[in-house]
Image (cartoon, rainbow, N blue to C red; front, side):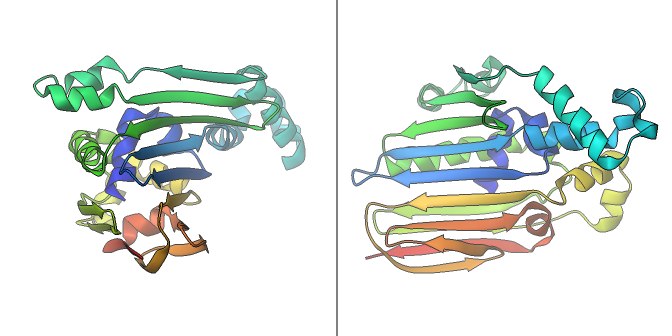
Length: 256
């Protein structure tokens, strides 16, 4: 899960950390150890939730409207801000690249990552995300370490646990364990910004999809739910606030 949390740093953080919807993480491993890591979130639920909560400020005559009328006006305003269709890619921000300027191999890995935005009114969604193409299991693990390092200085994540994550991936297994050292309820309540973030995040879900080139022999999951399983893939779901409150999370997958 720390990989998931840390990737927020390289995404449009405001979109991911304020939305009420789903964050989707997809990890696909090929037979040669290469693969893709893709994390994305739909920005529209964020805007919908924010604009609805501030309807009296953003919609003329909102005080005289019922909830259905407000919802209709919110949808109009949202799609005035976005094109009917968009499918764009852009580079990782230079400030994030500069964090690894002393390590050429790590900077090279960032060249294999692309940020993107796609969707539109026709789709009813606007996804922002990051796609990383790794050439080996070692690259995948190193990239995780880079994101973890970036997360340490990410103020947007301070309300969440300062997790320590162990990630081990071999041709025959996938193991990810996060041990949380979380803030107390009293510490969170001292900051109004944390309370506001918790309100936005309470309904957010996280979906992790992992696909392997081999058949799955066994799966052990703690702090999450197995939503779907096939011979060589598994879909796991979390509630974001549930994760923040848990002491640990575990995904332990053995392959045949």
